Image 1 (cartoon, rainbow, N blue to C red):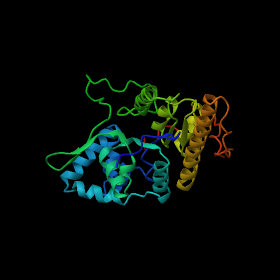
Image 2: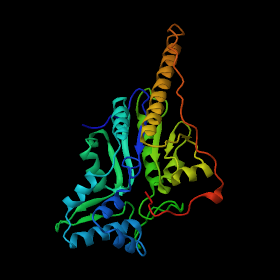
Image 3: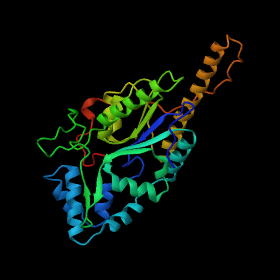
Image 4: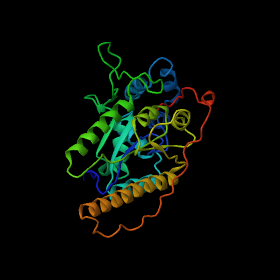
Length: 307
């Protein structure tokens, strides 16, 4: 079943994957589970992360590990019931859901399918992956960068890894939203976008959002520190743990739906010359405070996990 395309003011919700849907870095989870942690650390000494995980999958395949072994690891990756509840409830309220992740299509697809969540998402932007003719899992960069002829993503933010600028992807998503809003009769503006993430790579897409949108950084993680130093135009709503993620996200969704209902009622009243009844009162939605401001000198340096 395809995910909802939105309605009644329900926002578009875009999830990061690692440490936002699953409570781990999926690359590290698989490597650790298959006993290759030390070798992966060695590869990271001279290869970019995305290239290193592809090379690691090659070495594991050569050692007799199969794609099914990788799937088995991913099925055991921790995913909170509050995440599943938030996904299902947001979709039921009319939200469109997407994934924007620096993991890869094999990992993301395996986890979502295992937990029965894949049908709730309308699309995934992540590093492509496939199993080749020899049965070896291949993981490629979202933006090609190794070939000198490749354009790469062109972003100058140091928080974006070379293989994927989530900000560039977010700009495309927002452009599509604007085009859809312009083509839809009776829609004065695009729906709000909510972005959830935790890592340094989630800062760039957060900065592409504007007034009327929301960023949900995971408290205590690198993206929250970057946002505290230089916040986006979008409203910032921290979440601390997955129960809190569910509460904050559904609070935003319900608030957007309520505001859209009031706006529609007011518009109908104007069209009827003031004859329509006043819209019902709507309770205020209480949301968590923004990230605390933090001196730039205290911001974390580049971390091992870029997702």
